[in-house]
Structures are given as structure tokens and as C-alpha cells.
Length: 159
Image (spheres, rainbow, N blue to C red):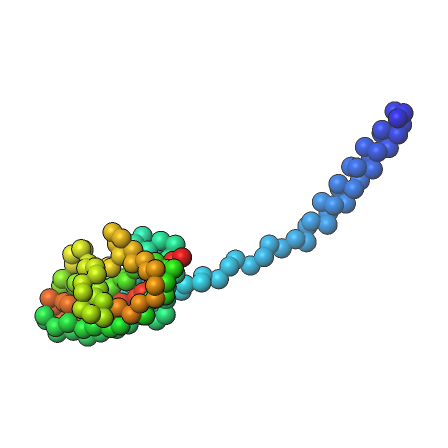
């Protein structure tokens, strides 16, 4: 290859590069992604979602939050139908007036499977050991509060 051929190829490469850069002036980046989990209007649900970032990382919210109004010492319960092959956590958050909030997980036969070990107005099932099932199951969650007020619960799952 002669010197003139090399110079022509280099000149051609510079021209292509310049025209390529001129065409980039009209580039507009794509819009920023929408927040997939906008904060809910309900303050208890918002607190649950905030806590879930640390207490249920990489887990996906399942369904809608459940809401309860409890009196001092009163309990409320609900049933969970859980699929096999997934691991679960239940996060609960009470209003400040609720005081100590407890969560307990039972089988249909009334056998205690797991209980919340936290203190205060927030509670979680699955914090030390997520609820992982080999077979589908229907379980009962009981919640108890030392004071009156609103309580919200949310189920989270991960494969």
C-alpha cells in the first residue's frame, strides 16, 4: 500500500467520522422510566413499602394490603393461600396508637408455625427465616395490638 493510499483512507475515515458526529446532534435520550411503585396515599401502606426495601429486598408485593381496626388487646385474623416453590414474608404496620403489634402464623390445625420477634408498631413474619413451602398451603395470620388503631398488612414473595 502506497503512502497516497494510506492518506486517502485516513482522510476518508475522518470525513465519515465527522459526518457521523454531525448526525448525532439530533439525538434525544429516551424518557426516564416511570416509578413502578408510586407511594400509596395510605400512610400505613407507605411505611410498609418503605420498610420492605430493607426487610423484604428483592421480594415482590402480592395483592393489595389488608387493613384492620383493632381495639386494645383485640386480635384480628386473615387467611393466606400460599403457593409452593416461593418464599414469603408478611409485613404489618400499625398506627402510633397501636403500641406493641404482634403477628402469629398458624396452620389450619392451629399449630404455631412462626411468630414476629420485633417490638413496636411494626411487625414481620419471615424476618429470621422466610416462609418457604414445598407444598401449597392455607395458613392463618393472627395480629394482636396492645392499643387501639389502624393496622395494615402486606404479603411479599420471591422465587
